[in-house]
Image (spheres, rainbow, N blue to C red):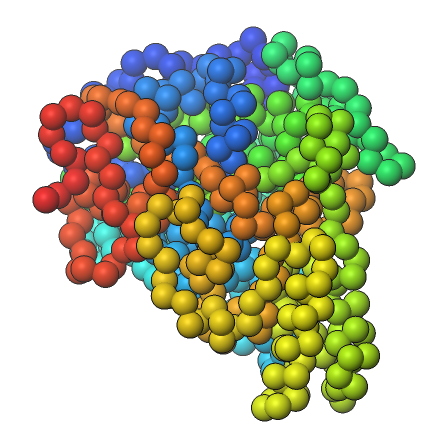
Length: 554
């Protein structure tokens, strides 16, 4: 049944209460034979949900996660590549290929020769549209080079419904792909979609509910009892983290969506899409992609180890329960996968308190401007227009001005590599030529070396001319209120993520073997009987049922 207009406020209030536990832990209404294809694939990404965070909180989950923990649990999944950011990570989840093949090398990249003032290109931006800019993009899937599971299913049978929802545009677009029926993300005043599409009536109605809720403002969210040990302040310069409880002012949609409440709204919106589109109602499998963004929002703003993240984990558990309970109530036979686009690392200041003296903030000498100054000093080379170097610092990549060609370009690359390799915070630095000389990596992702990780997310003509990889524990960015931690490193705290599969009737298990997020698409394809030519996937089908039958085709 649909929630009544007033019930979202009640749902949000309940979610803030540590005493609330939904029915998701109970037996689902549907217990279909796992030999038949599910009617609905529910692909869930939790942004910045590291394997470490999953391990830390799994003992406290009592709602939606309870069901998933009874399925196939792979605690050591890998976003195998080096570019552990939101857009590349999401691009692997339902394409089954690494970012080197999806074309999504980063959240954004630079094209120094681009014929507009801004040389930066956002990963889901149509930069050819004169209305578009990286900060206010005309959203498009044009840069995604590989088909998603939804794309392939719709090619097999156009009756397949392919829908996605997230707080982040890049998450929804990367998981749904090109051939979509509904794609929504959180805009300035509720959920929005592509410029050339009209919002569904259910979305307009839900946005009206959200508008009334946000207009009223909100107080602090309740702290679950198990979060008490996390509720203490840590100083970061002249401010503190560790005690914030997410109040938001009247009418502040941004503060609402970037708090744990955004995940609850995402779950509610997903249910509205199921109803509006009639998903899971016939024998043609549908795909619903749901990316919960607020673990990432909270992780960046407050780090991973304060009361803020504890409240977020409890709320995420509730949001999952909300979604699963709604699907059960509708009698839908569905299969779920939950994973993440990347992991994360706590603020260095709190890391120091907990014995990690290697955690530091990135050296300002590694910014593009500082690197350019030193390269020019060593080589005497300068350019006539714009910067000579783009990126650096937090990006992990450096792009060279389009004015640099031939011997001058090689001089700059050589000088830049020498500067980077001499910096004590740099673990590795590679030119584009060095990277492209490497074969695509194979074998267990936990055993890959640095250049193999880089190769898996390197896109010729789009990735930087030089790739710089910082040492373990170096945190990108300068700390300021509501931005204290980040990700994007080649280290396992950013690469390792959980992978959980569940369907009613399956026999669950836990498997610690290293697997990859590119294994998700071929695994789900097997569930719905989708065959694809050899070479379609970088990953492999995982047998996700512990019974005698193999869930993967021979």
